[in-house]
Image (cartoon, rainbow, N blue to C red; front, side, top):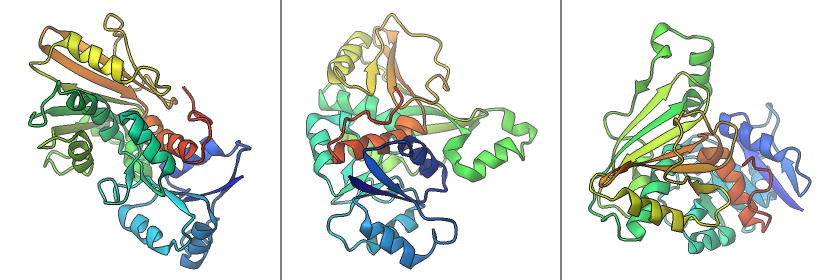
Length: 303
């Protein structure tokens, strides 16, 4: 039975991973108590005793944790931004291709995708791979998220320190230096990152990431995405005549993602609807763990 350790189990992503794993009988789950979770010696011992480690830490702390690992058998899933485009790390989005799923299953080091990036990449990457969208495309992306995406500090701000301004949606990252941009460009194989407008709103969790695709035929986009994701357990493409009101929290509590192709003719947009803490973070991390351990891909997940 695999020994699994969550480093950073007190943070939002770590807590959500713990919730998905705590009742499972096919792994042995470990965390450090409050007195030891920042103790380098205790962390090093736990990291090196594990078969699978989840890093739910800030970027610098994640790099520090990797440096503490000397056991060649310890495999890592990093939920931070630190290694998403780093050499030697496999990007943890198995639905990119059969080769990607195989690479994750055999990897020692897996970088879990960012939440906004998951929405963008699930739309753009298959279109680029199929040649429907050129690598030179200059794309935009609008992504609405619940405030849990900002971690404990933002959750407290919205839930206990709320001011009148927090009742309205708020665009952020407007300097176009958002930490998800490098993976959005690199994983899709684009020449340029998208012009990206993330927006946080007054609800706990859920994400709606929309990518406008002017000039692309809506029917062709739907066909491409439907063929790419056929048979996937966690990503589906809604029928083109079945587009509901796309409330951004509609997938809250689920670990799956649904793509909606909208528009007509060459006036097209695609929206990825999912939970920023599910397929956008902790659910994706557990999916990757399942693949790495040879377990059913959806074990412990809510579809």
